[in-house]
Image (tube, rainbow over all chains, first blue to last red; front, side, top):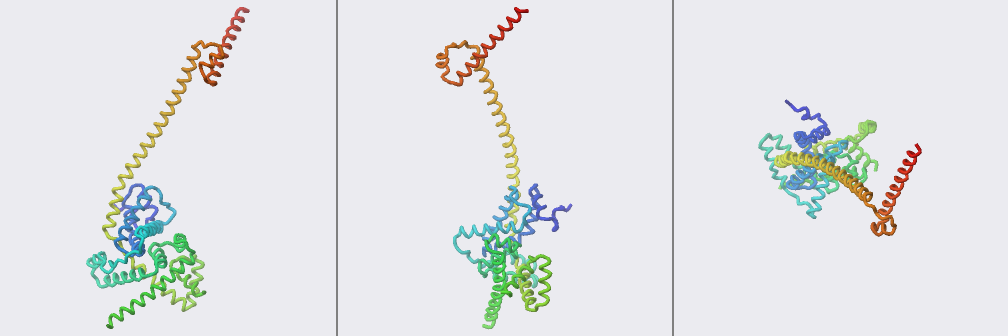
Length: 202
Length: 165
C-alpha cells in the first residue's frame, strides 16, 4: 500500500513531523526532493565535486541531528534552512583550508554524467548534459559575491531578503549582485563562444 | 539609474518577489516598453537555463546519509530511554534523600528532646552553660525548665481544685 506521506503534495513540515516520530522514509523523501538544489548550491560555492560530496553529507547529517533534537523551526521553510546550514559549513570549510578552493576540473570528466550518459544515450540528453556542465563552468567563473547570491537564490530558493540578511548587505545590494551576476554570465558566455569559434577556425 | 532599478525590478518579477499589485503594474510597464520586455526575456531565459544546470550528488553520498539516519535511530531511541530512566531515577533518588533527611532531623530532634527531658540537669545557670557551650541549646534547656515549672503549677492547681471539691 502506498504511504500517503510519500507524494509530491505532502508538505515538508508533515514529512519532518513524521520523521521526528520515527519514519525514516520521510527523510528519504525530503532528501530526494532537495538533493539537487542543496548539492548544486554547495558544489557551485566550493567549486570542487569531492569537497561538495563530503560537505553535502555533513550538511544532511547535521540536518538529521537538528531535526531529531527539535531544533528545526517548522514555521521556517525547509530548503532555505538547509541552504543556510550548507553555506555556513562551506564557509567553515574555507576557513579550515585557509586558502582559495582548488578549481577541480572533474566536471569535464563527470563520472555521474557518464553514468547518466550510458543509461540514456540519446543525443538530446547528451546535449542537455553538456549545456548544464557549460553553465556550471560559467557560474564558477563569477566573482564570489555575485556567485553566492545567484546560487542561493536560484538553487537554494532563498529570498533576496534572506540572502541580504545572511550576507549582511541590503536587499538592494543583493539585487544588484544578482543583476551583475546575470550580466557577467552573458558576457562570459559571449567570450566563451568567441574563443570556441576561434579554436574552430584555427 | 532608472534603468538599473528597472533591471532590479525585472529580477524581482522573474523570481516572483513582487506583491500581486506591484507585479500587475510592472506587467503593464513591460508590455508597453519594448526595451524592458527584451531585457525581461533575456533574464527569464538565463534563469531558466540556470535551473537546468542542477547537478545531483552521488548515490554513494545519498546511501551514506540514509545509513546514518538508520544507524543513529537506535542511538536516539536508546538515549531517549536512558534519559527517561535517568530522569525518573534522579527524581526518586531526590525524593528518597529528602524523606530520609526529614526523618533523620525529626528523629534526632525528638531524641535530643527526650534525653534532655530525662536528664535532670542542674538548674545552676553556670553549669548548664559549661555543659552545652551553646547559647541556642541553653535556650532550649531553659524552655524545657519553664515547661517543667508549668507542669508543676498545673498539677498543684489540679490538687488544690480536687481538695476544694
